[in-house]
Amino acid sequence: MSLSAGQLFAISATERTCSTVSLFATSIIIVSFVSSQSFRKPINRLVFYASFGNIMANVATLISQSGIWAGTDSNLCQIQAFLIQWFMPADALWTFAMAFNVYLTFFRKYNSDQLRRLEWKYVMLCYGLPFIPAFTYFFIRTESRGKVYGSAILWCWVAPSWDFLRIAVFYGPVWFVIFVTLAIYARIGELVWRRRRQLKEVGGLDTTLDVSIPDDPPFSKVTEIRIEREDAASYRPEAGPSTEQDPPFSCAQSIPRPYSVNVQAGSSQLELGAIRSEEPFDGPPTREYRSSSTALEVNTAAWAYTKYAMLFFVALLVTWVPSTINRVYAFIRPDASNFGLNYASSFVLPLQGFWNSLIYISISWRCFKPALSDLHNRLLWYTHLGAGHRRPSSGQDSTRRLTN
Image (cartoon, rainbow, N blue to C red; front, side, top):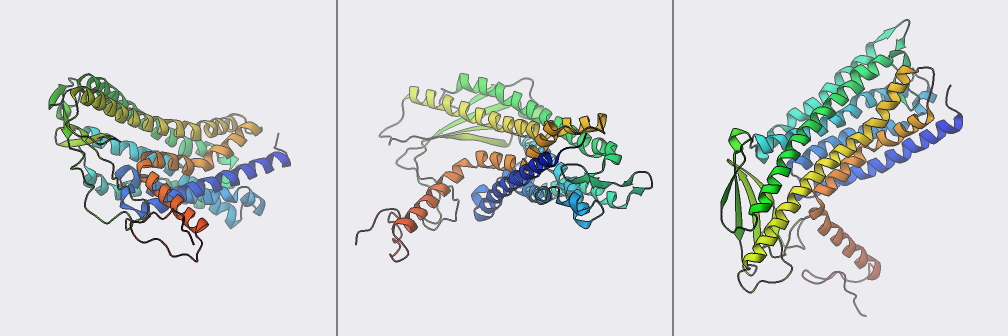
């Protein structure tokens, strides 16, 4: 049983709406990454590279069913199918690359420079590997099955006569990559959880401690907890341009940071975070303050990573579970079309870039906060002062009202 015209219209409208939302979210990644060095951390760099694949996939999903209406032999249909086959599975590969980067940081002591040198290999893997079948499909055609690319209800993709290729070359490899990615995050999450419990027990000590973890890899059996104190009065931000001259989305902070907590394993170092104080310190903090603040900061940093890994887990499941069920259903019952499953697929698949942007923003929220504040101040200035007033000089509050 085929879908009705109303059901097809609902699917098409959902595809285009979700694609537009995803394109807008992806633009946030690109603009912020290009605008400021503060966003160019190894994980963020991979999300940035993945965003180009998300854009190309969304170009295809924006076409929606127009490719089918133009005819399965039309250039529009063939190009749309090619883009979907190439760039949709690439997103799962980029997710694996992000997980592999975290693995290398935790277990192989890779630093930022070493991770950056791997990026060209990630580009070749994530975009080169799915390109091979996507391009090869252009040249495959038989008398009984016809071309590989054809109508797939939602859009042009692998035709129903070649449905075994959907499982063997698309969904099968994607789920293999997902399981490997989840295995990496599960291993790292278990390590972070174990260390979080041990750091909580020793977080109140104000000296250098060695905490042995017997079942860790040989090169990270000893974790060093270093708690450093810095007087609030002596703290100054790193030398550099003033706030007025900082590039957009600067993460410069002027809040005193009397303590920082570092966890070292061998020669590698993972900075868990800094303990901030909103109130000035007139003298050395008490032992009780150090104990509670250190434990709180370590716990917060550990849980932040755990939630970050869970976000990838949820994004992968939300994207691929409904669409996989739909394709398995279509494989088992090729003569039946389930509107609910097709609609769910049309909703989740175009949102790959949106999920990536959520992860990117959650990682970089400290950088976005001053950017949003600056944008708010500029909007207030243009709204309330008008173009005829002179802009306040450096050091003045750009949002205060000027009296005539």
